[in-house]
Length: 157
Image (tube, rainbow, N blue to C red):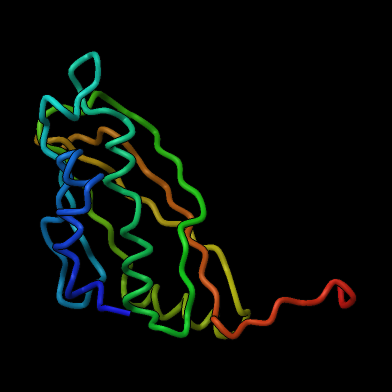
């Protein structure tokens, strides 16, 4: 598997992101914090001339998963499991979201999975406009399991 850390800027040319005007602006050295932005364009606004809600969600889709994949390593399977978005006010101009999982939390997740085999973890972030006002709140649930986890058989339940 290629390192996500080394290839994160390639997300900027991923067709759905390119088409929505979404771009990765930065990631810290530890790859525990990623900042993404979306500029307003004629092709990514809705009927009432604000950011399309689907694009706002899309800009938040894979980044907690990316952080965990990179930091947990190849012995773990990481999937986005569910998400919700609450719109607070219309999104106009350039909007920004930051996704961060502290190293201590990643260590906690790793310990939990090493002990229990699998688990669901919830993360949240806010999307901000240029005035630093919250325009949406996003909650993501990410599923993590050890690759060698053995699911209990039906006979043992």
